[in-house]
Every structure is written in structure tokens, then in C-alpha cells.
Image (cartoon, rainbow, N blue to C red):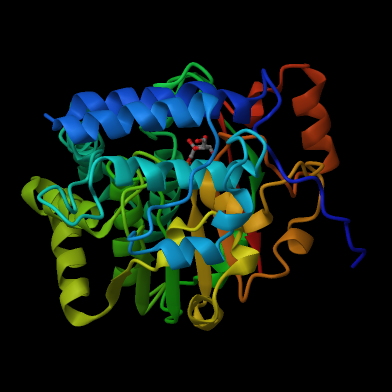
Length: 392
Ligand SMILES: O=P(O)(O)OC[C@@]1(O)O[C@H](CO)[C@@H](O)[C@@H]1O
């Protein structure tokens, strides 16, 4: 296969670009949201003030000497980027580091009384308790009467479009209208995914989760179905080791989601009980590897995680950020073959993602031409389009 030379890494330093808007507008909005979410103490308010000033006008500061993960961040490039503007370093790196410093500001890593308090939890719980979630769970009663194959396809699409319900995405003007009509698939390799996961096929599914709440619930429903119908004998759900990108799922969010299901009526409760049972029997495992909050592409995955993905029948990566990390956060021409940019990945991999950043690969030439003909490039970032891509 011909090698495509690596495209330029995306930075946030071009005013008017989507990445620049995230750094200049979304991050201040996230700080404002966090500030209002809890009755913080003066030291936390001062730290949030300092972070706001740093991330908009200042430079990247290293973690404090006693930060528990300082060494890890040194290995992830902190010394290289310290002292530089947030806008001039790889966008993926500055976004990740922003969330790390936000947790620092509110005392998440301790020591102290605020250790382990998730600053995004009120927003996540509000979403989980929303009437929209009620409606989505009630719809499961209608699904129950359909043949298993149709249920599987509906649940796959539920998981895919669940990625639109992204709390961080709703915070800034640079995001699109998440209720926009006429969503479209720009690539659909779902048949390849089903051939990797046939009914009664056994094997292990790795699912790299993205957002909590209205994305994690359909992800869990899909996993419950795949386990119940033997598409996988075992599933490993990879979540974030700590709060990240506003709504990313942690273990606590998995617990909240499963309890939300078991506490609901009808078919939803049956899914919840299946998941509860699968966890108890070791058929479903939750993992929170530190690399899932790393500011690096999956090409740099450490050996233990590589081995896990290599042993899986398929690894399904959810959402926009995981896609950026899978293919590399670069200005790829959209027709760059997916097989080339995912050649590093240690086993079959599937991406389920709504498009919320500029990165896209693996489009066929006709699709790209039709999308770009309109002149409006918002299909890349507005969350109105989605893809199911598979590299076997
Ligand atoms: O991974 P997710 O939840 O689908 O999306 C994450 C996201 O909202 O955050 C980034 C900007 O902060 C973009 O990559 C994307 O729009």
C-alpha cells in the first residue's frame, strides 16, 4: 500500500479556525460552568482565575512539583511545551492539559477535602435524569418485539448518534446545533463490523467509551445486547481514569448509568440487570487506564494496552476525540485511506463518531466531492454527520 506522508499536526493558532475557537471560547466557558457548579472555596476560585488568565493570555505552566502524575506528564511532553502559548502547541496536547489543570484548580488530585470530586458531575447527572433520557429508555419497550438482528442495528445507531449528546460541545458558539436536522452518514462500514461480531461468535469486544449520560447509556445497551446474543463472550469497557473533556465517562458514570437502567421500568431495567450480572460474572470488565487521558495519539499506546487491543476481536472507539487520537490529529486529506492511518493499531478497530472536529479520513472521493461542493465546511464540525469506519 502506498505510504501517505504524515499531514501537518493541528495547532490552535489560526484565528477563526475550529481549534482556535475551542481554546479561546470553549475553555473559558468550561471554567465558567465549573465555577458555577459547586460552592467552591476561595483558593479554588483563585486557581480558576489563574487558569482562565493562563489559558487565554498566558503560557503553559508545568504541574506543581508534588503533583502525583508529574512524571507521567513529563513523559507525555510537558517539559517540551511548558513556557509556550497554549495556541502554538499541538491542539490535542493543549486541550488535554487544560482539563488536567482544571482538575488541579479544584483540588481533584488532593490532598484535601475536595479530592476526587468530579466538577462535571452535576451536569452529567442532570443529563442522565432528563426527560430525553426517559424517552430514550421508554423506546426500548418497542425495540423488544423486533428480531435480534434489527435490535442490534438499532442499538448500533443509538450508540453512534448518542455521541451527539456531548456536554462540552453544547458550551460554545463554535459547536454546531446538536438538534440540527438531516443527519447523514459519510461512511458506513457497519456490515464489516457485523462480520467481525457475528451472533454466537464469542470473542472479546473492547469498547473505548466517550461521553457519560446519553452516550454511555446507549453504549451500554449495545454491549448488553452483544453479550446476550453471543456476538461477544466478553466485553471490556475502557473509561477515563478521571473527569475529562467535560462529559467523558469515568467508572462512577458507568455505575450511575447502570443504576439509571436498573431503576427504570420495562425493557430498560432488564438491560440494566443484564449488565449488572455481566459485571458480576466477569463477562463485562471496566478499565480506566491512564493512557485514556493522555494528550497523545493511539500510535503511542503503551505495551499493556496494545496487548489488550491485540487480543480483542475488535476494538470499538467512540466519539470525536477518540477518532482524532486513532488516526492522528492532523490535517489529513479526507480521502486518506483509513487502513494507512490506523496501520499502527494492534488489531481490528472500528470508529463510531459524529463529526465534531476537522479531522476526517477514509472518505470515498464522491462523498468528499459532494460534501465540499456546497462550500460550507460545517459538516466537519457541527455534529450533523457521522461515520462508522472499520479496519479489519
Ligand atoms: O470526543 P467527543 O466527546 O465526541 O467530542 C469532543 C469534542 O467536543 O471536543 C473537542 C473539542 O474540544 C472536539 O474534538 C470535539 O468536538
